[in-house]
Structures are given as structure tokens and as C-alpha cells.
Amino acid sequence: MTPMHADEATITAELVRRLVGEQFPAWADLPIGRVESSGTVNAIFRLGETMCVRLPRTKGGVKALLREQEWLPRLAPLLPVPAPELLGRGRPGDIFPWPWSVHGWLDGAHPAPDAAADIATDLAELVAAFRRVPLRDGPASYRGGTLANVDAATRAAIADLEADLDTALATALWDESVGAPAWDGPPSWAHSDLLPANLLVADGRLTGVLDFGTAGLGDPSCDLMPAWTVLSADARGTFREAVGVDDASWLRGRGWALSMALLGLPYYRESNPPFAAMCRRTIDAVLTDADG
Image 1 (tube, rainbow, N blue to C red):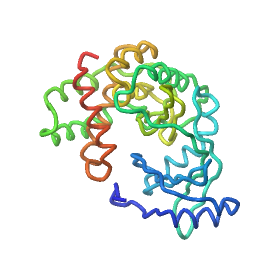
Image 2: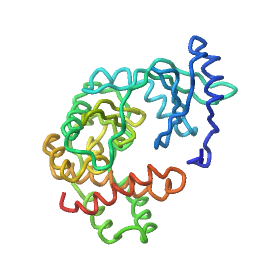
Image 3: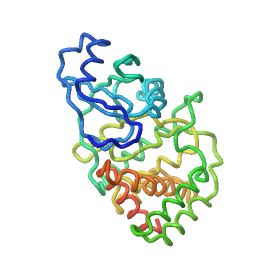
């Protein structure tokens, strides 16, 4: 596979087989196969029919994996849809220098582009459930701070993408989001990365949520991103009404979606075309929904 990052480890099915055999010998004879995914942080392999192995692609992904190992077992019982059960904690060693995880496998498909309104209320229930999590000793969420933290990088991305988008409109919308009133409530839990690759659907309903490496406390408006990263224009209003957020939170959520997509499009254009296509759709959704 094409590496996505300059410092990415070489992770093969044979490596995973050796790791499982050394550390979880009871599972050593199970078949192993790579899962084709648009994810950018972890490599994923099926382990038999009911499990999967997740390994960080880079040293920078270790922090997220350890966060997931710590908090997933505590968060999953509080959510309205299943999350993958943590079944094993792999240790770093001579053949792979970082920790890794074994999870239960969840069946389902990722939401198709412009997902129908069926999952809008399900997504709203998931976001609300994260906000109700009573655990107050968690880490800061990945996107739980202020948009000012990514202002310079986002503006640079807009300038670099001049050939790909209406830069004047993108700048105006970004100005509106970054200038929105700040979150003035207590820190609240958020998943912080509700992208199509981290959601599962079946029969038009949300059936699972994946990847808790960015979850934590802060401004929860980042969990409004699926309004633009996942949902159709028609479903966006349903989602907003069901979540019940104010205008400032909506603008900040739109800002997180726009920033994520602007930064991701050029970085993953060649190495991860599905992720880059999701970024392109998100940018188009934000720019065509300027009054949203």
C-alpha cells in the first residue's frame, strides 16, 4: 500500500501474524487479512471472524491508541450504539516498537456520501450521549479547543487550494466560524472525529461508532462535523434540530468540518484517495450551504 506519512511503519499481515502468535497464542491459528480502510492513523487487520487488530501507522498515533485503550471500555456502555470491545492490549517489542490493540469486530458499512435523513437523528442521539457522559477526569478532546488553534494552518490551506475552490467564499465562511462566540459552558465529552470511516450503518440506521483515539473533554461543537462530512443537505436540518444547538456552536462545528477538509485534501490526495474525496465533498457541502 502507498504510505500516507513520511515516518510510516511497514505493517504487513505476516507482521501481525507474528505479533499475535507471540502475545496471544490462543489466536495464533486464526486467519488474518488487511482491511481496506480510508483511516489515516491505524492499520487494521481482520483476525478470524469476530476480531480485528489495530496498529498505529506512526509514532504519533501511539498517543491516540493508548487513549482509546484507556477510555473506550468506560465510554462504550454509555453510548446508544455499539463500539468495538477492547479484547487485548498488544505490547511493543523487537518486531514492532509501539503498543497495539485487538478489538471485537462490528459488522456494518460506512455511510454512503450524502447519507439519508434516516441516520440524522441517530447521529444526534450519539452526540447527545457523548455530551451526557459524566466522567470528568478525561483528557482534552482532539478538536475541543478554539478554532484559533488551527486558524493559520486553515488560511494557508485555503491559499494553497486556489485552483480547487472559491477562496473568497471559503475565507468568508472561515472568518464567520473562527469569529463565532466561544464555548462558555463546562467542558463536555466529544468523539471529535465523526467522519464516515468512523461510523457504521445497516438498513438505513446508525449501528456502530469506531475509533476513540480523539475523544475527550472540551467544546463539543466539533461533534457537529457530520452535518457536512456525512449527511445530505436535506438531512442537515434534521440533525441540527435534533441536537438542539445554538448558532455559535453550529458555526464552530462548520468551521471544524471545513478546516479538517481543507487540511486533508492536499495531504491525502495521492496517498488516500477515498479520504481526499470525503474532504472534497465536505468542502463542497460547506461552501454550498453558506446559509446553513
